[in-house]
Image 1 (cartoon, one colour):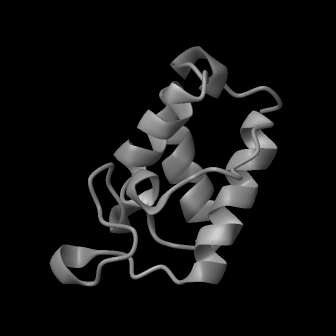
Image 2 (image 1 turned 90 degrees about the vertical axis):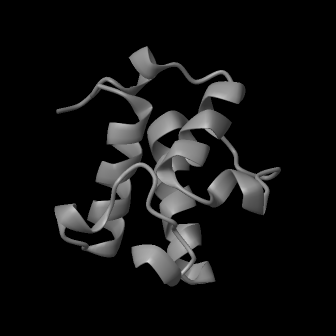
Length: 91
């Protein structure tokens, strides 16, 4: 399982969105081009889910890291999280 897959699953679960609403390149905040138009509370909810899943603080995340699922995955990889770490631990 890839980091992108886990991130999408967390977003879908936390925000109760239909699966077809998000891809790895879907803008999370922008409303143009089919973006999700997340607000600050939704972004905090997603970060909480990611923090719980990967046991990683997000104190230093910047807006550029939170643009799409792909940029979040890049941020996680840069923080030392590997795709192998995305494998389900308690399914």
